[in-house]
Image 1 (cartoon, rainbow, N blue to C red):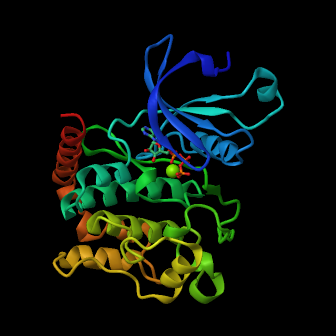
Image 2: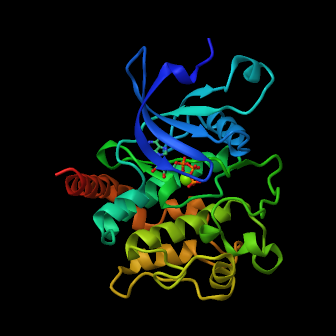
Image 3: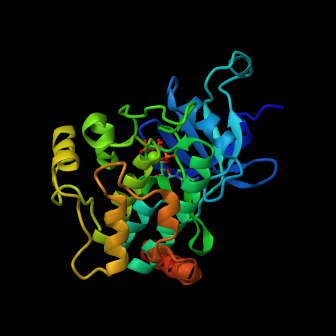
Length: 298
Ligand code: ATP
Ligand code: MG
């Protein structure tokens, strides 16, 4: 009754990550299109991602898990980490891919659609005591009609106690908050969930600038340069032409002291992501996805 890799036909590569490869695939019997994430043998993120995706199965704006695929029936019986996960296929790819295909920064309307939906996803995740710890454009995926979902829980963590520290160096250093580099200097009132808010701020600033915002364009993101920029540099800002609402929203995410940073609930009340503008913002994002598709397959 367990799912097997041979149940799926691999069609093309959707993306490569640290751990493994994600394929566009089809379930042979049902012909259902899926994304198949295959892990390298022994990858510790495989079990973590499967566990978290099961826990958050009904959360909005989170990629759905269809099946956990063990490497063999005996491995499954022994409780070994899965070899692969069958995931909901997100037809628009990632926001990193969208930015690359567009070849220019995104406007504030589509960015507001991203921000609002990621916040709704984070609200649900945090209510289940899950921190993502690796939010970035390549882990935010696009569905139809400007839908956005959070993916890649390989660095995620379920907090057993509310204030479980999670300063450990998992995820992508570039999007890590100051308190995760140096908990004592930056946290104030320590809040493990605030790290995801920082990463969201860096990610949406990247969408608006068209490049990673914390280092000069083109500089190699090595560990030392990143740590200096994140912990000792001024928090980066949107361009001067940006709206006051957008500037304030980003500033609330990129508060260096975790204790002063806005919470997800506060940000959901922010005028930049107002509910009354949500439908128009999603339409603007859907239009960008369509434009990027035309540029790749004429
Ligand atoms: P990394 O270590 O680089 O963060 P990873 O190995 O953990 O990556 P994912 O982030 O889950 O893997 O996926 C890598 C890429 O594959 C994504 O950036 C995206 O482009 C593509 N991808 C992943 N899941 C899906 C999906 N469900 N639908 C469509 N594309 C996907
Ligand atoms: Mg990823």
